[in-house]
Image (cartoon, rainbow, N blue to C red):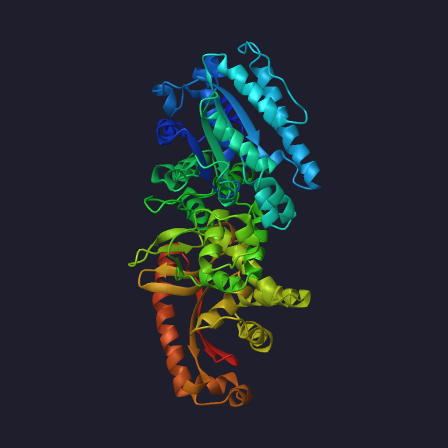
Length: 588
């Protein structure tokens, strides 16, 4: 079984026998949805492959290849009337230079469009009766020439635009000057003029259909007057899994791979992939979530070649998503949004997702929670999770790979000293190999409490202690580390369950239940608490009652986890924080 990790050319996948998850059944729905469509999805979510599939389906030059390419797919059994009826031109804005002076960037845009038009002229030379004139210094003139040539034929043009918002993303992540972006998009800026030309071409100049993909709707706002005819379909339920895999599809691939004499369990592999890669929902009407396709293929390809799971569950090709969390964390109250997302109670509630916002809003306007949640959603680091009783939208972290990015960002902000990072690694090893919480609790009392208790948000109850343990123990190299893991009778505060492929190493399965006891409830001052030993503090009536409560919950949840994960030796702890001064615990 050949898995197409890193490949986005549809013809290559089909001709060379690579796995392709059929999405051609959506072609009729896309045709009915409109003639100028905009489809937003996070990075590395299969958008380029989708465009390649559409290109091969509609290209009139590929009519003779239809049976070879689509005969075995859904659309091959009942093609639409528009199959192989179009000239197809493709622009890929990710290939346009985004650095340099404004003149250099504009020249790069002209060159890219001219290259695409010249390639178009060569590819369709036998079908065009009118020559296409390429103007090196004016790609819009070249575009008009191409439209004129198309209009002299019985066919029309289908324009595909990939990563239309690439330049805006460079601005957002600090890689480009916002002034240059303004010059491109506002007034009579070249990029805005390009989209005005696309809009005009669809008004009777030979352009019949347009399909645009991107990561965020930022540019849509900035170019509204230049291109206000596109229809966004990214939140339509029928297109929820247009890019991405369903669990049934992932399970089928694992079953095929496991049938090749594999020494691993398809069921355990699916459990692991579900935890790390599933959870994305792009429509409030979608009934199921989808798996990130690039991460899934990364895992499946490694599993096929090596016969085991990859050590690192996050494909480094997606590591740049860290920069997006860095950006959010630096905003006023941005850190609090990351905390809310990690709290596990789906506390990120906004009235409505922001559908369009401009770069000026991103760079200069007030950044409220709605703005930050919307941006994280479009970046693929949050996903839609439901509605409240007041018809508000709820968002959550989709999976463990995304959760790891949040934990990493907060740990770096709270413990920027490399010496602290080294200490955390050593302490985490002690806890996970021996079950001894003493070094970790010492570190939290002496170093961590003072850092995270003075942030610009209000901690409540056991959230403070839970986040201390979560950020310090998180280790997706060995564990499926989940906060607020749902069990049969409630939610586990923090569970560190060894990945199935890591059970050969010396590490323990851990379960921790946390409680918080304020100093006023305890009736002691901070100085008095610090002066007593943990043993003395543990037997105080108020503390013992909290420990008993945490222990009872841990025992209930532990039974569920043992049954769900087949864990035979679960090490459970009841942990109580006494203000931001001391930590006591009980090993169960």
